[in-house]
Image (cartoon, rainbow over all chains, first blue to last red; front, side, top):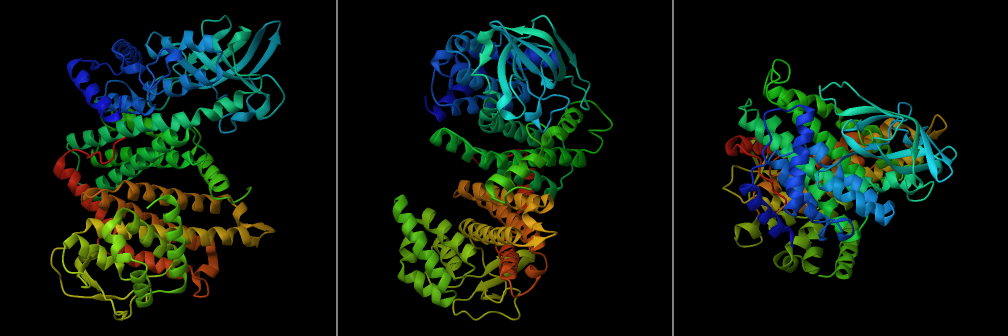
Length: 364
Length: 262
């Protein structure tokens, strides 16, 4: 199915099927809504387009998933951050899990039956992810994992976790990846209280957690490569979803009767439009070349800048909407936007990558 | 035009523009078939020619041709062009510059208010020119920070400068994406020129800083590009004007147009 037909037929279907969320914006409700939307889209087939048949998909180009996510974001049917998590988790499974494991597991996630999480960051390893110290040790056919993860989105809801742990020496080469069942003995999850009031992130404590040998993703030492390979997925499809979401928020700002400051509104739109043009270019590059490289740091910087400018503009032009009322979502979303220059590689890390890899400025 | 032909044309144009500017370049471009290219393959010719004007620092009066093509009027004229602040200018074809211009290379002359002019094509063209100018400023600054040593190490090793140049690169890449996506409507070229003007001014600011003292002298070519960016930004609407116009459009429509689709 081509992109235009897909979009048109999807819109017809969404118009005919009411998947609108309720009034509860709490995290439990968001996660339940996400599962509900996925289930409906999976059963109707929409959720399967753009994924390979080996994992329950219907095939077709990945760009169909970007279109689906844009429609979901534009209609506010699911929170875009948690909606997009499958875009990094599923390609990871497809590329690194034994085929039988991927075929068994991926449909559970895509169909909304399960939520998964991604255990990468640690208290001592944020920007310097390669220094992570959670350790996995071989014990007969199994691995035994101990350590601590942090910023693990949806860990308290997750059935599985794509986990990075050290199996070898220091540095990139000593890291391996696993698909861990979150109900394994020895796992404790503690949600983090955060600035925006949604306990979406959690700490995950692993205490001698036994992981079967067939849950190793790739070979021992492939963990860093796996982590790098998921960046193109995050920075193509997920970014397109997020940009669509931000357009819907600029619409809402206009609808909410903001101050008619043409300069600020124009600047917010210019940033968003630029990020959208760049992201469209990146989608095409991915479709044509099958891979993306360090140039996606440009997309990341454009998006984070656009996101923060949009919510800064909202706070300026809807005075008090962030500070004096918690009606609507401006407060939560404004505060969440502060993280846009931190998660997924900080603004500084992105600029370091641009300087080193794209401008060829050598080492610092 | 296939990729090889395009590559060959780019090499030829770059070589021509490196040796010639102004009325001489007008003649050289005419000999290379500019009029025909503009008529038959404007989507190839305009980005290429205007970006290369920026990259090489040359100039020619080809903006007139782009604007006249849209008006459908006879070629060869010099239409009055809106400048920022409600001013009007003319890009004279005989190379005679106006009175004490900032960028002495550009033959722009203040004129009385002109009639309505179609702007989309001219804005796209100027956007590509600004992009090329910005890319050259970045290339000059990059060369300088790699070559120059202070405190016993290259300037390029200092994170503050690396981040300025990274910021410049990001602005230019964003502008290029907006220019590439700009269509024949009025709004996408408006946003594209705003992005390009802003990127060129960002480049001017950061690259000037990275070049330090030498970039403030007339011995180094940076100042030519900085001045060109300032002048071209104002022509057919500055980044500031266009951004405001975009905001006015949003307030009128009450909804954000999605101007590119997958």
